[in-house]
Image 1: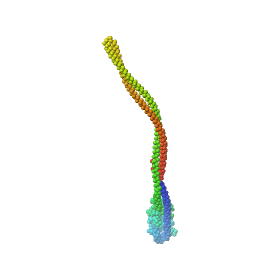
Image 2: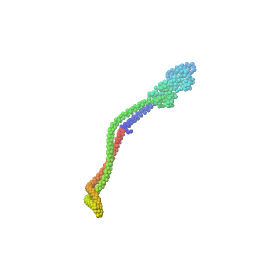
Image 3: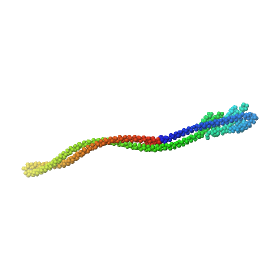
Image 4: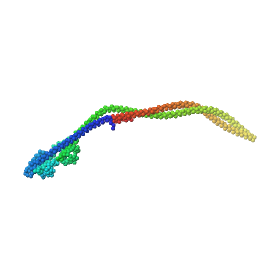
Length: 577
């Protein structure tokens, strides 16, 4: 993801500020936390030591009291089986009661004989009713040793007590034991319960067997066996130290010390959340201060950057618009140049084809000129031939007229012959009639007359046939004359047309020569035009190349603008189409 110039400047600055303040805050937090933890640890340890000293002093006082009472003569007298012994019981009871009254931490002080039977007590009603022969504090003391028991529930009241016992000597012999049940309530009330660490910290004590003996929660005393907890195991296994643990979902830190004489473990604990409240407040305040400083720094930086980025943004907008226009113009020029180059190439191709076509046309026109010249010569020869044919046709017409006249004359002669044959036939008929009249004398004449008649008939037939032939010939001659006249007229027109064609061929020849010259000029102009167009193509291609370079420069300019936009705003500017 690309970042804007504002973000490139703002984010590192904010990060540096956050890192600086964060490192400072974290360092101060850790130093303060460590100092507070060390202070709390020292405080816990000091209080644990103080409670241990108080406990040692308190136990020492009870031991001195029990020892002093055990040495009193009236106590020893109580254990003698005599009148004086019985009389001493009252004194002993009174003294013990006075001692209990002065030291309220005693639940009771008792004197027992060697059998473990109470013979004197601060509470006289216990005499003869309480037997402790099975208790360790009696069994150890009767052997001649002062003894301090573990904490347990008083068999008389059920309160939390421990027993301090001391042997009673009479003439170097142990005759009994004096013991006192010492209540922990007074010690807890005066030495343990006042201990406070923070709002939730407190002190507590565990006996030798891992049972709570003193605790702010009274319901746990002598009823909660906590030796299975890991932190209790550590407490019971060590002489002193500091443990961190979670008890009832609360994270705690405790300093503990084991009382050397009793084996009881004293612990002073603090709620980690409670004791760390100042550090938590410090951390929260540091976070708040850091947030405020960062926010203020962001506002200041953004105001400063605004004064810098606003002109840059205007410049970018101007550059973007200019680059867009340059790109558009270069694209248009490139497109026009490409089209011009393509059109010029097509024109050059067309000119080349036209030049080739003109060369072919010029060649064909030159052939046409040659053909026209030959045709003109042929037409001149044809005109001469047609002129001769026209003269011959005129002669033929004259001959046909003469033939027609001769046919008419022949027809007149045939008519005369036909008339002669008709007269001969009449004469032969008359001769035959006359011969018939003559009889035999005219038989020979009749034969001659018949022959003459036959000849006359044959002449008539021949005359008719000849007349028919001559008539057909005359008709054909007339038809031929008409045809000849038409042919003569046609030949006359052909002669005129041939003359006109000759004139036209002359003109065509002249025009063809002029066209050949014009085509040659056009061909030369086409060659020049092809050169010009080739130059235009080269220039158009060069213009297209320059346009492409302009377009590339415009694209490069656009890329620079994009990089500048990306630098300023972190966004990719719109690409040119």
